[in-house]
Image 1 (cartoon, one colour):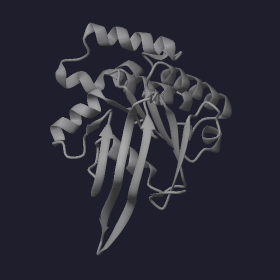
Image 2 (cartoon, helix red, strand yellow; image 1 turned 45 degrees about the horizontal axis):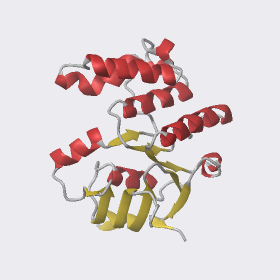
Image 3 (cartoon, one colour; image 1 turned 135 degrees about the vertical axis):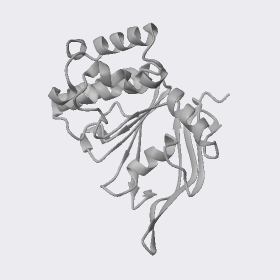
Length: 229
């Protein structure tokens, strides 16, 4: 009997090339990996090793030159742009390194900004946001403009926004890059609690504090676009 958990994230021969003038840059080469459901994995590597490109491919934000991406058993590589957008909206939460928050707007306005074209957030979404703000300890900051937040507070807001759609997969780009050790500990506590609820987390990092944290389930390393042995 096989008791292994199902695979939430799987790539096969994933490759991404970019034109660089007359030359070609290989950002990612032949990456094959599997992350189990409810796993908390990190991908480390120096700047320029392909970590952010990998997240963009997993989230369906960019298309690979070759290879496949499977999310929860579904091949997303050859989906049309519209269907990839639905995958990003319903299945993947993305937390960007620079948080991608809009200055001049409050925390609440940033959370609901993606819903403006659809008429704004329904009551259920507002209630969900209120619950997440409380859980992450930033309820008092809901009407604060984001440029007045600390790095740790901005990070938590970015995660809350990614979680509003209740995605089963959360991707984080360098989540501890701007944080001191106390805030790293708090963040990993939050991420481990999300994993305990059944979410799958994959974070890129060059931060050894995160790589070496005992709450991390699996570790991969990228060097020059390829997985190191």
